[in-house]
Amino acid sequence: MSLQTRSIVDFLDAAPDVDVRATWEAYWATLTAMRDRLLARFPGAQRHPSCADHESYEAGTFEGSLTTWTGGGVDWMVHSWIGNRTGSILDMNITVWLDQAVDVPHLAIVFGTVPQVFHYSDFLARRDLALCPDYLTRWYEPENRHFLEFRGDERFTPAVSHGLHTRAVLSPVGHSYSAERTDEVVDAVQAYALARFERWLAMVDAAEPVPEAERATLRARDRRLRVLTYTLDPMNALATRAMGAETAGRLVALRYGKAQLDESATAADVASAADEIENTETEEDAG
Picture 1 (cartoon, rainbow, N blue to C red):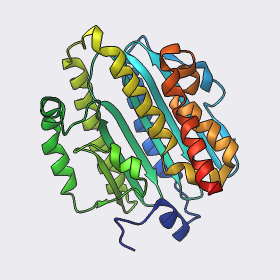
Picture 2 (cartoon, rainbow, N blue to C red):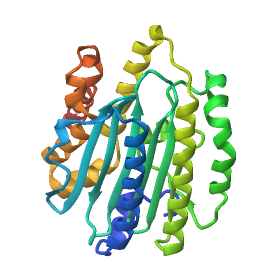
Picture 3 (cartoon, one colour):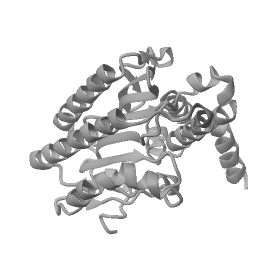
């Protein structure tokens, strides 16, 4: 199978017992530095109590860390990792779902190992880009040359997600790559992600307020996208295999912030999205 279309499971099954602790240390330090910058930029963000006992956890053959924040311009922020540091697989991320005061795209940065290096980063769109050329031009055109520069780096192979929803979410400047796990590659990914992160912060600083009348609609879309993005993540299949369906499902709900959504009456329809998906999958299995 082509490296571009090889799945995470394919990569992992080919080399299941690689020690990736050094890569974890490098990437986790970078993501933690990003978290600290975000908390300085959004000083009103507060830790959400739903993840209070998950700053360090073990479940089955996986371990990880999951912390979340909300408030102060951030609707939901996730800083997490999950995997097996001596068993090849890591999924490490910082994701920022902004509140509806601005319509700057959300931010997602993922570092991983399978045990090859995996990198995903994107500015998650808050409009239908094909129908909103002004939004596309304002927030994505400045990033286009940086996208093309990184896309042209021959050390990296485009990685095609097997998840249809994951591909549907990807923006025109979204990156999804694999590469050999060398110090040079690890450093290159870190440098690129940090530069992209700083450009996103500059976008937030340049944003104009969204009119009050438009915020409820934007909020409903944002939150539904958030639920679906985490619930339909192909990585969930590996977590289920490693720790069981019940524990994996509970962690997914913590990541998308089910408790936070349930606290808000106006988000009730969004919070039920995961239940709708689960019911659909159950019906398909039964069929």
